[in-house]
Image 1 (spheres, helix red, strand yellow):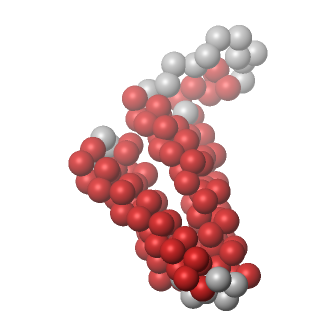
Image 2 (tube, rainbow, N blue to C red):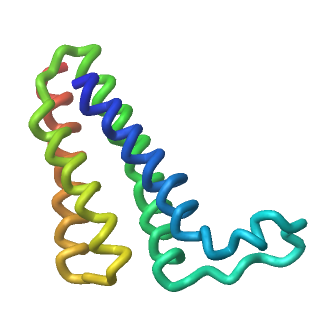
Image 3 (cartoon, rainbow, N blue to C red):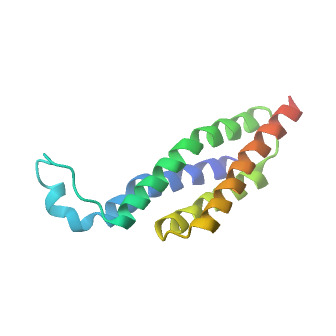
Length: 124
């Protein structure tokens, strides 16, 4: 489970920091300026940022459930791994505006969090 937690944090770093930075390299002059006015984001960069915000909303719940699973010795590695894979798949679906599949992925990933919570409640 520790591996899945670390990979989730790596995914967060990639999605929250690395992808937006790489997609914003065209605004290098803005990044080197005093930034008095907000930069104009491309559509894809704006989607990338919104997908990152979405991850930031669910990551705390995932981390809390995963750590509680470790503490109470509840084996939820499979469900946590599925959540992680779904969240990784969510990024390109959001960035490339594939809405229906993206919504299904989000619902199933949220279902994984609910499943993890139920597993914990059942073990306590």
